[in-house]
Amino acid sequence: IPEISWDRAVRLIGGAEEVALACHVTPDGDALGSMLAVGFVLRSMGKRIVASFGDRHFAVPRLLRFLPGQDMLVPPEEFPPVPGLVITFDASTPERLGLLRDNAARAREVIVVDHHPSNESFGTLGLVDSTAAATAMLAEQLVYRLGGRLDRDIATCLYAGLVTDTGSFRYPSTTPAVHQMAARLVATGLRTDEIARELWDRSPFGYLKVLASALERVRLEDGLVWTYVTRVDRAAYGLPYAELEGIIDIVRRTDEAEVAVVLKEDDHGDWQVSTRSKGAVDVGTVCSVLGGGGHHNAAGYTSHDGVVETMARFRRELAKVRRRSSGAV
Ligand code: 5GP
Ligand code: MN
Ligand code: MN
Image (tube, rainbow, N blue to C red):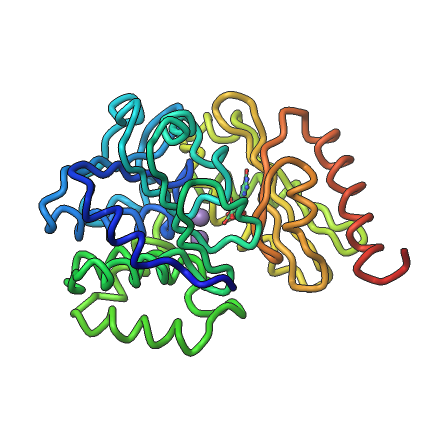
């Protein structure tokens, strides 16, 4: 891992009056939590800040609305068109910034805070560590380097990132450093039970019905378990797209499958493909080939084709990666 230039980051930030923060589209707890945590510190340093993400329909996912600091958020149209300094969070490529991609491209300086192995090292300064379990771990470091102190608001945001990306401390990325960081955060007086309920243990009734249709259609074929959710399924219950995030966690528990896939149709008719592996197959490679990216065991991409064609392409690329990892080719 290359040495991270914390000092240069601190100098760049110190010299800026205004800082524009951006995280990846359809933000998860790690993207939004890391961004808001750093936002709190910058605000206490007297910086003018805006924070946003580049979704066409700008809305904070319901399960992240409990995070403090929502008043920092502005829709992408209000993001500075030619920013002096941009800091990005949990985005491995400029494309992951969605509508804010061009704003970042015009910025004088772009600091990239990220932990994806597939990070393309865009921007002018990378605070990137692919061994970190979450971007929140790098965000915590940035908080300290900027002279910030952990308060409960900052800790809540960072904790949301840490528990999201470690699957509540269940994934193999859960190192001693992860638990040590969690201990520092919890010591600020966090209600970890309330955070867990907000993130995972509540949903509108319609979620159960949509989940039921997804499970009705689920298929198991040769170590691959997969299903899909259409926008028509959701429309019947007025269920927003963002509510579908947890379905993959139910599907991927299948003992007989090494790889799990859930296709989720968004409001525009595009399909977001969520993929998970138990370790033998690198779905990050499969998804990179298909135009997306991610991690070895959790990755995704967007498909503009229908379900049948999307799955045919996925199976084809999966077979190639499987062949390579079994050493047959
Ligand atoms: P999820 O299935 O939860 O939406 O995404 C799992 C992981 O895959 C994310 O943490 C992210 O790293 C990655 N990912 C998902 N969709 C995309 C995509 O369209 N492009 C890239 N580069 N990565 C993605
Ligand atoms: Mn993320
Ligand atoms: Mn992350």
